[in-house]
Image 1 (tube, rainbow, N blue to C red):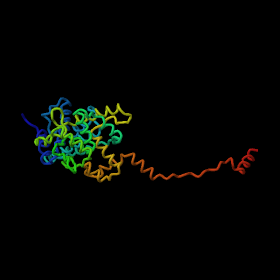
Image 2 (image 1 turned 90 degrees about the horizontal axis):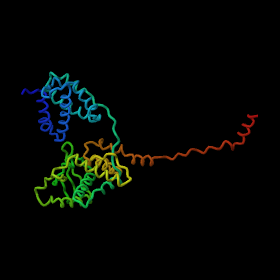
Image 3 (image 1 turned 30 degrees about the vertical axis):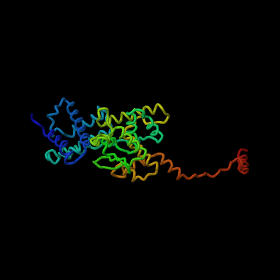
Image 4 (image 1 turned 90 degrees about the vertical axis):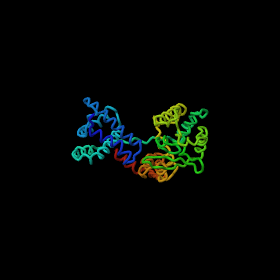
Length: 340
């Protein structure tokens, strides 16, 4: 079977360039793969094109623009998702443009396709009261409930991204003083997160119950796993969270967001730290942000802190009391004379 140059370049980009030369994580490779899976799905749906016949000469501005419109109109993707898919395509174009100087003009036209401006929704996070109610929902009289409580507590207490929690193994946990967990974050950056004493006590009990310490081979086991002893997935953790959020909504009058994702726990922890007057620098390091600019979004989103600051700076300016014109006898005489 005759192969095309597009197939060759895409295979090299996903299979060699990204994981080997760029040393990106498997999650990043999966994100790029998803983009091109959708792109090939779109290409095949247009005039019944055959994927195996796609060439770099056909990989042009019109095709990419049509793909982006298809994402928004047919798949109902958000503008931010559309921009993320475009960024993946731009990365692929930067990879092939040095290999195809004869296609440079068309490739530069693809690079010139701009990202769309999108509105940024308000950050979603839980109040201290809502988080407290939520953590009281798991039934700790059963093993599954104790696992769920440990998962929710650690997700909040560590401010971890959901993938960081998924990647946690038993060997990444240190329960002796100082108690910490080691997280592998974006860009393969490793950071140690201190654990609160109560969380550490729960974690010790959880590890004993799962018998992780009795067999050395279990040190590489996932800290949280499903019924098949496999690492929990994003969908699995999201399901667990939403299950207890739905229960909490029925058991309390406290207002919860319509949808509480794993990342809402990370936002919640950051906001609670900020409201406790923790310095943004410490919050940046705790969350594993590269730049303080990223962490500043929490300061901009914290309406309660803003309200307190405005109240502290408020000057109670009292307007001078204006006299009642009915008490001015000269004015009353003058007005009566006018009426005569």
